[in-house]
Image 1 (cartoon, rainbow, N blue to C red):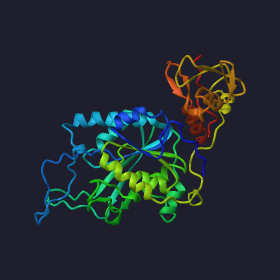
Image 2 (tube, rainbow, N blue to C red):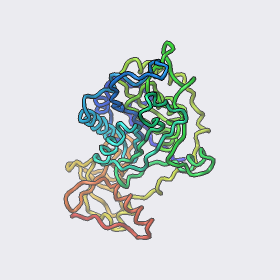
Image 3 (tube, rainbow, N blue to C red):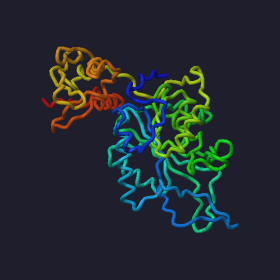
Image 4 (cartoon, rainbow, N blue to C red):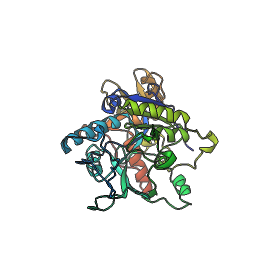
Amino acid sequence: MIKPSAPHPNLPIDQVLTGDCREVLRTLPEKSVDLVFADPPYNLQLQQELFRPNRSRVDAVDDEWDQFASFAEYDAFCREWLAGCRHVLKDTGALWVIGSYHNIFRLGAILQDMGFWVLNDIVWIKTNPMPNFRGVRFTNAHETLIWACKYKGAEYTFNHHAMKALNEDLQMRSDWTLPICSGPERVRTNGKKAHSTQKPEALLYRVILASTNPGDVVLDPFFGTGTTGAVAKMLGRHWVGIEREEKYVEVAARRIAAAPAAPPEALALPRSRRKQRLPFGSLVEAGVLRPGQSLYFDRDPARAAVILADGHLALDGLTGSIHQLAAALLGSQPANGWEHWYYTDGDGQAHVIGKLRDEFHRAQSLGHTAPEPHQPE
């Protein structure tokens, strides 16, 4: 099991934050969460009430939060909340978003336009879908999840062996057959469904177990009745929920308070398929970067450190590793230097040095010594 770093000190972990996620996300620390799971409005565009053959009314999704005037308005809404998610997501983190045919293709295009790299699409096949009562279309028996990392080549968590173990030691496929949320799991208020689109805990169990390690932080910008928080607590992960509807916030808080938490000894997993650790000095000795070259802290030209021959950095009288110097600049907070130091290419474009590490790993996997040097100066 990989030991996680401590949560960002300014991140309000294990709390439900009330408000519009587009506004709340802007107030959270940059690169502070390990996983985002988003179950946004689907923009179902229902034009009329639905009835069963016996003329009883179907309790469909007709909530105000799922209504948009146009596709353009919906797309603008999604770009805004996805930009907020990208802001808070670590470079080593991942994002999962779920939708139906109404919105998932639009979300996929927006994700790619924003620079996310799609790793898989997962088809959730429902064992007990709601029928198409009017008989004018096929029964909608599945939803789609997109799993993406922050950029092409990013290092992300995938607990491959845990997924195999869940699947009787066979590689887990991208089609997941699970029932919809019903029975005792369905959260109710005064005998009625508390939320019209509550997701099953089994679905979140797979997402969180596959993509995080104990102690990591999972953020859900459309928290609803708190399924993400309940499962994260069960699996020993921290969570942050954002929800604008007060009625859901209260239900989620009560639900999570009552949710069980697994003991730490039950959470140990086989080593995930993260890439082998690489010392920064390996890039220097391989000639990918060179002594005397400048690296910029969080792209800031005023905080340019010089690479020393031993792989340390020097800036304003301070000397240390990429991690030590980053921590010092952050006020002694724990820091992953691979996420904070940037180099410039021959065109003057800034890139995080984690990109060089990923290129180095790829080159080694192909039998090459190192990738091409990045020495603009």
